[in-house]
Image (cartoon, rainbow, N blue to C red):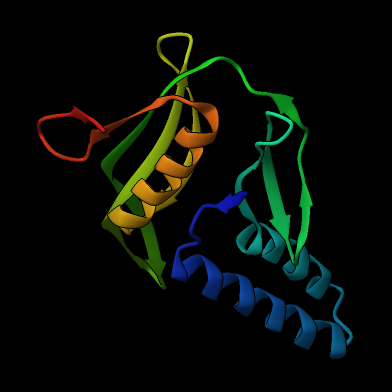
Length: 155
């Protein structure tokens, strides 16, 4: 299973814009275009996590144009899986002005050693988060904590 964090739309637009600017600069003979292309990689990369539940391993990944890299690690002794809502704030710059854009997201975390966690999945769809949590919980044989409401409950 591979889960990548959602890329904010402004970040995608900046990345594509820098690629286009880089291509135009390179075609016109300006070496500055290579710098634009290199910077665009930051905006176009995606971070996430990959699970190999058959081998009981995971890795935090960075993905760019379908190429995925990351170091495999053994699962620690997972105690439970938590599903909860939180706010995510992104700063958006346009010309000389900036603003903060806040959205509600749902996270799935795997907890071990009492308070250590592995962030497994991030989405805006609550049902999808629970589906992923239940799938992982079934394989790892652990409980799921629903912390999306004021009153937390075990599923």
